[in-house]
Length: 63
Image 1 (tube, rainbow, N blue to C red):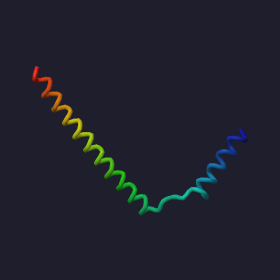
Image 2: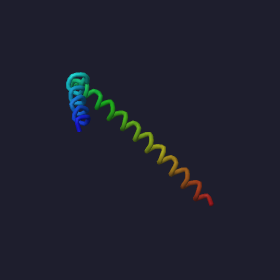
Image 3: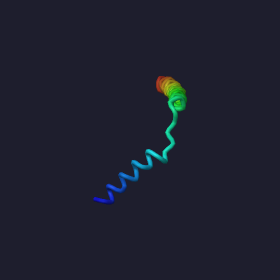
Image 4: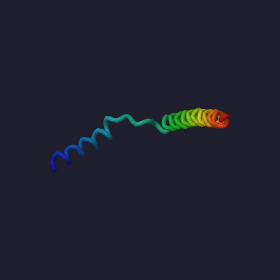
């Protein structure tokens, strides 16, 4: 049990003193970049899905 308590104490110490936390403005900038990247990725995947669906529908309707 003392090993677990030591581990938790060391983890709390590291989180308080050794981790460099971003400032609020850095966090906002990073969040905006992630949001824009996710939207672009979703648009690309959606466009690919639409193209593949349309092309396969056209192909299957030929027979």
